[in-house]
Length: 492
Image 1 (cartoon, rainbow, N blue to C red):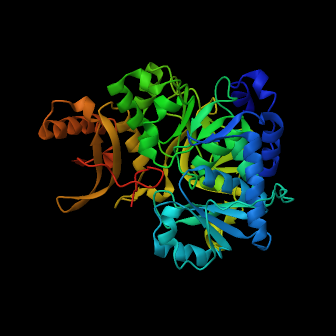
Image 2: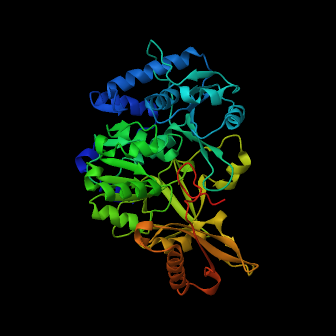
């Protein structure tokens, strides 16, 4: 299985990479191999890898001056700026546990988190200071940095590095506890993409509070000696593409849609030097894969979970195999139990913070029960057919996977997004669908004609389905779905 990934990377470059077990090891590699290359930049200030290494050492000095117990939990509330990037590295290499907080959190949520996770302190950007007032732990400006430099702590692969919030599209957020080894396995997996991977340009569009943003558009970039541009405003940063001219973008499907729509208006030149899109966190409509191919961009789709340090499967053959999430990464195992995907490897979390019951629900004998229903083809490609928690249980006892039905609709070029759920119709519970049309494909049509078009598509799909799976209600949306921080549709 590993050959699929090792063979896609330029062989000369691949020979320079090996799995590094800790973030300390990653920083040492960066200093040794990439010292004079640019590392992080906000377009005004750019730090080389040597400068980044020294600044992280000064950040550690500040943290050490707080005299915190070893393994303390330290939160960061800031946008994807230079401070946040340096703090992620500094906290982990000081022997402490970092928690990158979503910017959307309010005061009450911050207070609750500070108590639930026993925070030893919180680095807060100036714009969020008002929200953080009264939090039950010390507050330090995110710009805090020491005058001296401190050596990294003696951490191992098994030292806890981070806690990431996870709740998916349903349920209350939980804290997934990840070790240095798990984070670095995810980062090493992030190295694999077609062709040459070293010294590329990225924009950190996805928040560092999201595992996909931390792993693939930050730590994996450092692995390859690439330069990462900050992103304090996602939509504004999309406009920076022709200025920064990134080679690679790490995205969710909603952002791909936005970028392609702008490129259609402004011309392909808007995309600059863009070579590759790494897209995950939600299903990628084949329509987007087709557009990427027409624009000469390699679009790779991926599958991962916060509980597994993000990257577990990847597909860089989306033109020929658009409906698969790809193949399993090296050094990871998988099996299918009653249709559910279970995975094992050194990328797995230790468990949910302070929640043994929830941990026991998803972990068994070293295996993580993903909750995803899957199928594999004879070549080892994985296909996600649904989520166990999302199954619709009909009155006759039949189970219906909404994702399986949604995938049929995503094949239609005139559908941007959709959501299948149980709905009321003529006093009965039926399977219904909400559809967000792709308006350029519906240009010139009235609302009634768009409704009719969506009904025609539904009727066509229904003919391929057994009676109990057929969709009996179609709702056409004129506004976007409510979405999570990762821009997934919020199912609840």
